[in-house]
Length: 272
Length: 336
Image 1 (cartoon, one colour):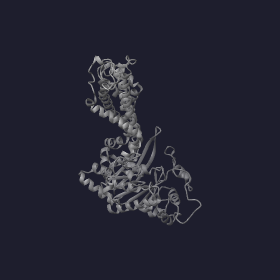
Image 2 (cartoon, chains in turn red, green):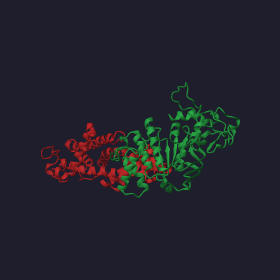
Image 3 (tube, each protein chain N blue to C red):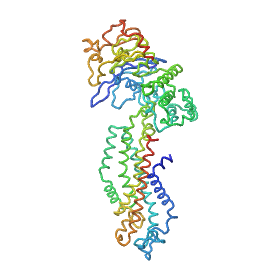
Image 4 (tube, each protein chain N blue to C red):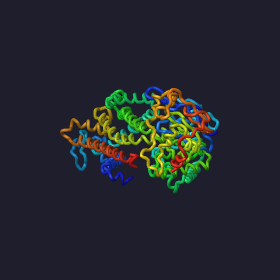
């Protein structure tokens, strides 16, 4: 297994990036050189130096430390949103695909409604209705994210539900509930799992986007999107204030994407 | 009487309307008896097997009675049927490559029916699984138990399927083309294993196949099906030596004989009619060289040729012992 991962250099890059992000989030207080929220007006807008690795922002906060702490916020959003929407989507999709008929129709039409609505607009309206905060952004993203898993799981359930081993399991006397959870879902979940690992990156990106337009994390929270938003006005004087949060978002999304691709090769049961 | 099927009919919904897949099938299986159901693809033999345990699509219309050990199981609720499936009646499917779940180990899958139908402890189950693996002739059971289906060969997988089916010591085993997907040499091994199991357990077996060789090898009695109806039924020797229905004769004629190279193997022209456009009279009439006028208007009833030997054909009358044109060499040919 390890050798198979190592054969693909890109997934190694993905794993390394994700590991760095995870470790950064875990040991943020040890890595950060300053407090992420401490204002120091005497040293505002300083260029990157040995004292402030990534420079300081318009009120003198250390950007490096803010990015380090920001990892925690972004990871929490990504993980929570995926952890909420993945099971909902999987179970709905599996039920729709396996039972079929009217149940399928009802579930899939609801799914279509959510899919036909631009996710970011829905998220914006939820955030606008409930007030801008990081929790509401997560809620909004989770509400727009599950339909994708429903779609994916349903289609893979459809392709395996007539497999002989499902039939064989019925012939053994297993009840439909048991078949659904023991035979159908485990065999249909791989594509959705890969999608989920890719989605970790996209969720983080979307959350940063919502924060950027002011619907998510509020200052002084060291959220990457909010940091980018703040640095707009000082972009000409302080390139570092926008660049480093941007690079952080880029590397995080890239890391999860590469990891997802790696998983894609690894989880394919036909290749095992 | 182990199994008594009485006028079983099945209709499936296709393109908005129901079409009859099985038409008044009646047959019996005794304890320790192996009954073969033969016929071309699409004649309804697999559907017969699935109907017995009601393993059918949602929109299926099933009529008639299925009695198992004197109990009318065709009236059972779904839950009650689940208790019988895999416990008293087991099934073996055609393709051992796809009948096993690729994600579970062999041990877990054999254990499954024990888990569902018995109150054995984990230790007892493992012991039983090891014993089953031994019974079906698989070596190094201790290692196999933790292996995945993809690590095994086709023959081994079919042995695993048999082990799964045998786990709860069923009284009736339904085999749906158990050897079709296997190599010829492996086929022989599997049939040998089934004969051995049959001798040891006295269970009834329904063997669904299109291979007359398999029938000759393991069956006691044969049911020949055509387009959803039984056209001939009798003891295996009788059917091979003295086939009555033109369709049975055609089936036997299409077996290649060892040591004889004919220009052309016997074949029956045409195909099985689709259930949507079923004719009024005998369904075989269009392909039959002996077809008469009556064949196209009235469906022939089952006629007793001899004790146990019946056929549905207008060529014969009750108790008729006209000799069929095919001799015992057919049986020998099939056995090779």
